[in-house]
Image (cartoon, rainbow, N blue to C red; front, side, top):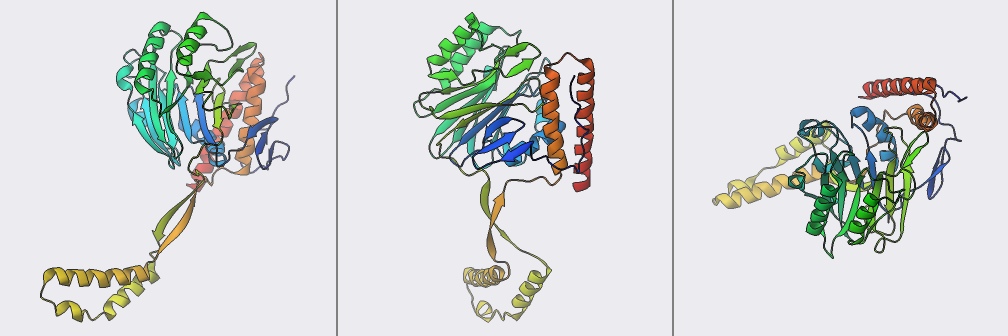
Length: 386
């Protein structure tokens, strides 16, 4: 038997036994997740199996509380026009690849707005869809230049072609001054020492790259596999942490990689300048302009001198009425993410873990019903706020 979890309620209270915060860790339903430090560089990857607004909404809670620097999705299932409409607060599109034939597939990368990045256009190398789908960005960090590659290979894709093309791309990108990180779903189970795995390991080892996930990232009933993975230079990045994220948004668990002691910009806090312009300030501005005699301007004959004196006087009054202030800008916090919605998302993840290891059709039916209710609750909460 399995225990039913109550239906999502937008105003329910978080159970302290569900989520606990400490200085360096976040404890969620029995799984310890390291809390990101300022010296950590974080990459998130998931085979999302169709990226849509509902999944973005559920991702909003963890992304605003513990935002990674780079987010990589495989199998987003969107065409070029659809993916251009995707907006992820505090992130920008780093790179993308969309199929123009066949269904499903595709890859994309989001980078945090605090990090400088360059799109490395590899679309011309994706000549055979299903065999190799890839995109990449170069991240310009104070301490490193890192090339993040996201790739997907369909189970029916020619594996040798994938290996050959991946080698071509790595040869093109490889440099002593650039560190390479590969994340994606290659549909090779890294838990089994097969010929395909040996071929992949041999290629990546020649560039110093090794898999970081040694445990299952896809679990269904009695089936366990690690087909989603993140590969890094483990000698240069020896201080790292990896952990799975079970968010129930796909039958593939998300993967998160934390590189420790990497100098990066603070993604949580930025500063920007603004001016407060309201009715009172505008009235004060107009009044001060009206009190100016402008005598020193009208006595001049040179046009350039007249303009410079006018501009100096105008700007002096403007800056005194609308002073520029330095403002601390924090990561976007979505007001519609209520305590009840947070609790419901956590409960959904718990229910997902239960049903994926069960053959009970009633449980599967209940889980789908729970997801529909949660989606409607989120839509209603957003509608009230927006």
